[in-house]
Amino acid sequence: DNDDNDDKLFDIITIDEAIDRIGTGKFQRQVLFAAGTCFMADSVEIMLLSFLTLVLKEEWELEDGDDDNGAKVASIASAMFAGATIGTLVFGRLGDVVGRKPILSCSALVISVFGFGTSFCWGYVSLLVVRFMVGFGIG
Image (tube, rainbow, N blue to C red):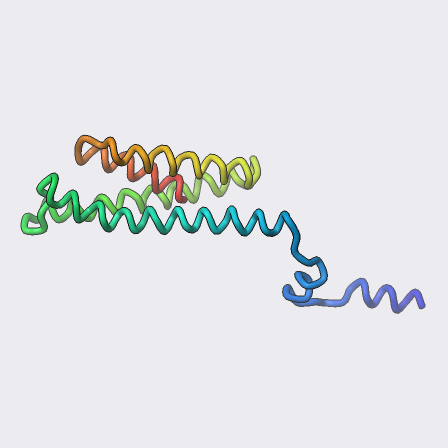
């Protein structure tokens, strides 16, 4: 009788079976909502980037005909992805030390502040800095 309980204690189950046994509740729905909102914000930032570069090509005369200006247009996207790379390294480590919840909140704040700050950029360099910081938050 005691051996049967020991055998059940060490049964190997799949992840799906574990989820079925535990069930889902309020916490799981909150985590799903938070993760979904973050993925949505990331997607919107990428979409914004595609529209932004098209508008800025006209507004700031960043045409593809000149080699330097073509590099400028490409570097707008590169700044965001470079920020995301560094942000992943920084926020990932901080998430391990401080906890996921405060880092998720900090990340959302950085994305919001610098995403809004994009609309106040006065030139190419300020745009690179702000988009880098948006990427940092996305990371």
